[in-house]
View 1: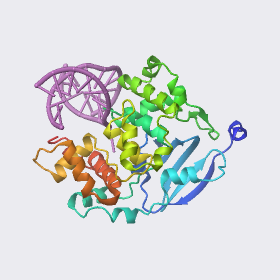
View 2: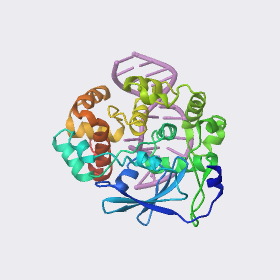
View 3: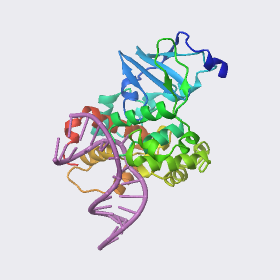
View 4: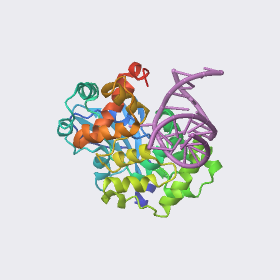
Amino acid sequence: MTAEISAAGEPALSRTFSARDYDLAATLNSGQAFRWRYDHDVWEGVIGCHWARLRPAPSAIVVEVAHPPGDWRWLTEYLQLDVDLDLVLRTFPDDLSMRAAVAACRGLRLLRQEPWECLASFILSSTKQILQIRQIIASLCECYGEPVLVPIGVAPVCGFPTAARLANVIESDLRACKMGFRAPYLRATARRIAAGEPDLESLRHFPLEAARAALMDLPGVGRKIADCVLLFAYGFQGAFPVDVWVMKALRQLYFPRRRISLKRLHEFAATHFGPNAGYAQQYLFHYMRVQRPSLAKLQP
DNA sequence: GCCCAGGTGAAGC
DNA sequence: GCTTCACATGGG
């Protein structure tokens, strides 16, 4: 590995993956992951310690990497290329709202991200616009991440900083990355994770509620951020993050002109959206944010 | 200037 | 239990 990393400056290697019904733009731009940059029909980003460039093609995704990987599981797992979207969409409730969301966003996928990066990213997400979350994380990676190998002609880029690294950054230095009041939360949680309390890998094998409780015990992590990590990093489909957009979606689409508490919305979501509720949530989120921005402004 | 952004935690009833 | 508020920062 070290030998490969040191052998910088080679041309990118390309491989095409079959991917039917995969909307790369919607997926990489739907507020799940924050490290992708779009330029001339191409997405550039970092997955773990791998630089990657993704380009949509008919029923496929063309992937460029900086060095030959031993295997491609880090990529196929991240993009969830083995998921049959039809099977997922078929489990959605057959109501007008979900039909509209699917019609508008078909091809939107859930990624499967590395837990620490996902957790830290969403700690930084609170009351921030997606554009600003990207900027904070870019700054954090540039300051405290390890450089990854890139091909000739590509600007240097870093991986996401480890919990151990961020645990040793003082709060004022974190604030220099423009994360504001989130800095002490990120630092305190980084220290907990670096100490293995909890061990993020072991959460994979926990029941949903136990994993959620372990995450919510961390500083700066409440129900919403915990659910984002449960869904985007571990794939728990019972996790249904309710942020301001999803709250508007649920209230307007399912409970118009009624007062309904967040608790009731969670109870509704847990029974109404079926075995792939997490997927349904992402469709509602993206639908509201991208397709119905004018409606989203009405009656919060 | 104003309001809002993929919220959380603490303090008040 | 529920409601209100402070918390940084930047975009529209």
